Image: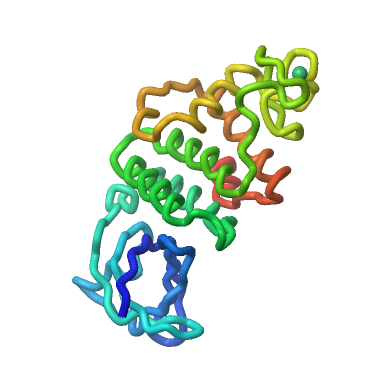
Length: 234
Ligand SMILES: [Zn+2]
């Protein structure tokens, strides 16, 4: 039986004593039944903990049943910090938008690297922003981040949600975010995650980036992230 690697995203109760865990793997999002999970103790408790990377075997069926699981990495920094947990949940919510055809090995690496940085590094919000913007690539929705969407002009005045990217002075409408936000979004998209710890963003720019991401996903992917909506309420 083949071994699979996966990161547990969440678990829900199933029947009397079992749970279903949802994992991202290198071949897609999977759900697996963990029999007797509500009675698990000690060594095997990790099998249903969110943000745990495991290696597992499952008996194939309509609902595969887990037969064996080993701990690979425990993102304990995330589970022990309310804000980190929030941002980890926030980025997880996007994964279900990925169609089965996307490059899951690449997406898996991006998600895993994002969790590791959220786990270790203080500024979980910036890592979350970067994931949310980089993830647009997997949906085929990457914004234009080099020149004006309308005319190709390289002198950028703003970023526009409806038009899908950078725009120049001539094409600037009312529903736009200014060039400081536009350039921050470009940096978040193109920079390696590990380098973003040197990025400093004012709270104003952060608020606008959050608004841009929410509006962009709503407009182009018809998606409202409920976790983000809760961050706003808090
Ligand atoms: Zn233009």
